[in-house]
Image 1: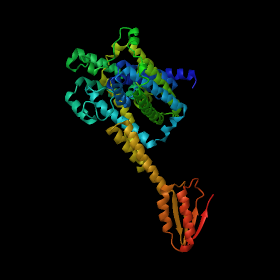
Image 2: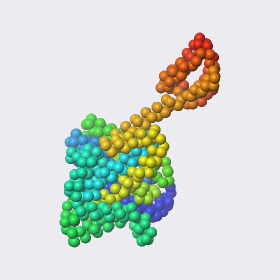
Image 3: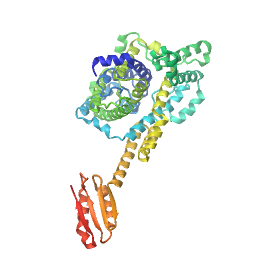
Image 4: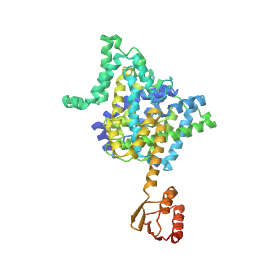
Length: 508
């Protein structure tokens, strides 16, 4: 696209979706950094780099990058093993270099090998996980960071026990704010038709403004419901006296760790997992794109690699393309990469100029935005659509959903893909050839390429050929025939006269 088209798209509405992504990304950046054992500023740096730099370089118009919850355990373990966050930054930079190399080697296409049923299952599962994980925040239980997505939690709870436990500490103010936020989001179109001026605002921004207003009113008229007396229930940006203090808070890589072999094992792990998550997120984002654009996975790997090199140099944690941010972008009406870029600019402004004001945002109203995004991802129509396509689609789909919700994202992808591949083998195994019989004339017609997997079924079919029959074997549609299959047919032809069978083999 031309620069003028990007400017026009930004003015037309990308700025609104950029605000929506910013509001979701802000607590995620802080929470993921906190859970990773990294400085809070490191999460914000990663979010800023992912938004400003990676958005401009990305292979996708709608993909949004930043620190990912899926890397939290890897990052926390690596920092502990290395015993140094500056040393860990060296691993982040090397991981970025590996990703650049993968992009230059055109390895991005590996994302296209994952079945569509698994990608769709991943999206629905993430929607369900978002809903389950945000229920506690919506009712005032904010002990776990807002971006946590794993089933088993560090505090010994899991997704479901956390929900049950959260009802014991329910906060009426949080419930009120989250319910009002959800009502606004679900009725936004109707509200826009009634109050035209609302169309000039992003729905998510209006939800946040209303949430802040309700909380301030509670502080005056219902202090017991007020959430602002505890940082646990509010956005908690670090406060800096000046921009120079921000720069002073950045951590530099410790290059003395370059000879350490642990750095390279961490870097390889980060590069593989971050690349896989980015490519899967790219596939999922393309499937959600209303314009059905096809992104460049190789360019995406290059962008992610440059992003991680930059994040590591500036003291940030690793970056991937993140489906939560990307789907929020799409459902908020984003059309081009300018929405992702603007969200990065807003994160930078938030760190430098607005922390005092942003710390007045209750996490409950951000939870309502995420709950709405989760509902859109896991809409019941997705289940109906996949089930209507047959069991070979819905079985891998449901397996992916179950494992992502019950374990984590990567395990869900791996197991769902494995099940999908099994179904591919079953389909190929059962439909590679067909036997037609008309009296003593029998036609064996091959529909597609034949491998050793079909040896037993073909052997059984040939064994059942009755004495005195005339057998026609048609392989004209076969581009590849495994040596074992070819040998089996030749053996059948050579022994057929002994059984009184006439054979005619038709090749290309």
